[in-house]
Each structure stands twice: as C-alpha cells, then as structure tokens.
Length: 95
Image 1 (tube, helix red, strand yellow):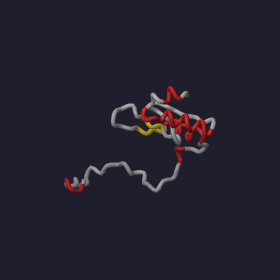
Image 2: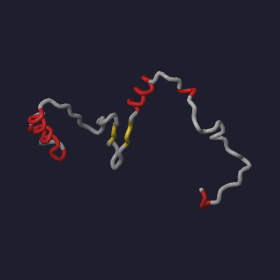
Image 3: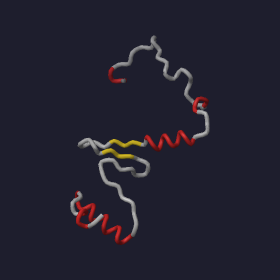
Image 4: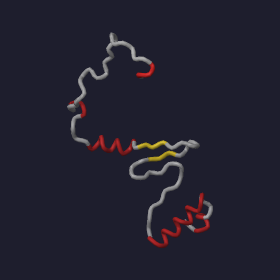
C-alpha cells in the first residue's frame, strides 16, 4: 500500500497502516465490511448493525472433535422440552 492510496481510506486508517508497516515491517491487514478477528467474523454490511459469526471456527471444532455427540450425559432430564398440557397458564406478570 502506498501513502497515496492510504490517504483515501476512512479516517486515515490507511496512513496508520503505512506507518506501522514502516516501523514493524511485514504485517497482514484486511479491509472491507467483513474482516476476521480472533476467529470472529464481524459483518458491517448492514447500516447500524454488526453481525458476529463464528461459523467456520465452529465447523473446524466439530470436524476435529473425535467424540460421539449423540451420547453425552447431561443434568437435564429426558422430558426437558415436554409441555404439560394440564399445567395452569401463567399470569401475564409471570411470563
């Protein structure tokens, strides 16, 4: 990146990158609405919103995991998601 193109970036970030490269040497930079940082992919493509995604990192974890996901023990009972149709409905302030 040259100092000429660096001056065109928002807030002088490009100029800062040029100065850091001169001081530190070789370094990797990313630009654009989607940049990976600590395996988190923030997406700034929508105005006034940021989406944080870790899909690729989670895929890697699942791929590297050697155990069996189906046979894990849990403190939750087998009826955790069963709905008791005979239970009284909660009052509005209890919901």
